[in-house]
Image 1: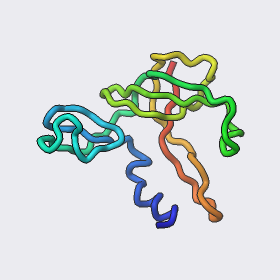
Image 2: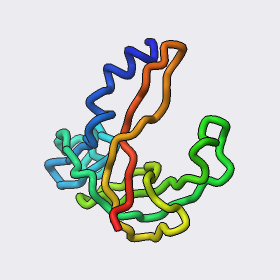
Image 3: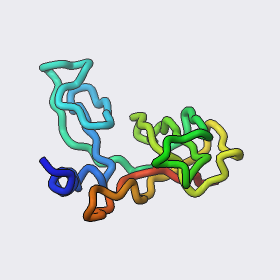
Length: 132
């Protein structure tokens, strides 16, 4: 499957923060799961739309990136505790990486991820920005 076709097939996931919820035990997951790891076969999984708000659980500052990311270095990558309870990893944008602190409030934003192939198809996705 070409990258362009894959991009269009996964557009729902790229532009929404959709995870899953087990309606049996109430646990939330991101990325989505097919089976609840606690309830197993007794669980009933449904899609869940996260608000995109949360707090920094942990973070790292990348000062020596690969060649693809040299233009944006230094940049931060964080584990985000979403308000609803799930955790995810994301790049932090529009912030002073030296001023970041664990517990800072964040919200999801959409940004350019990369350009694919010779035709220059731009892929967008979620990242997070700090709301101090």
